[in-house]
Amino acid sequence: QVQLIQSGGGLVQAGGSLRLSCTASGLTFTNYAMAWFRQAPGEEREPVAAINPGGGFIAYADSVKGRFTGSRDHLKKTVYLQMNNLKPEDTAVYYCAAQNIATYNYDYWGLGTQVTVSS
Image (cartoon, rainbow, N blue to C red; front, side, top):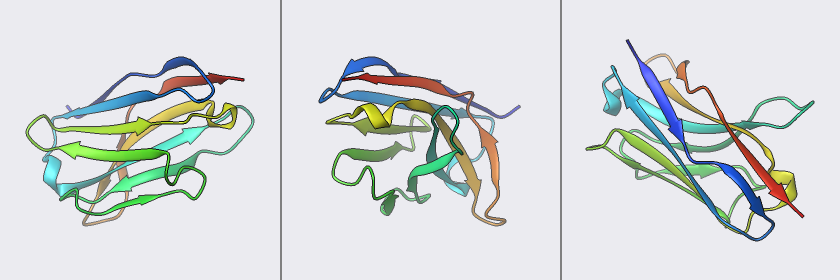
């Protein structure tokens, strides 16, 4: 059974930092690109960062460039999203997702974790 277990998140003041983690089990980690998405209340889910299977290429949404850093640890089968200089508009539920590199489908999703940034 495949699981993506998320941790991190919480409440932070504007300008603060948080780190999200997502640990995969039950899948061949190197067969998947990993991505972070977020969904704010009343908004559609949007991509935040995507990390290729090797971890050497990471793409970011324009809104988080220079503030968020994605990474992955193959030994731990874990991806991270380091979020610095957080803004109130970063408030959302954050999800990690595993993208099958053969089909480009997001096959698996974490349950999400709330990030709230107060002004």
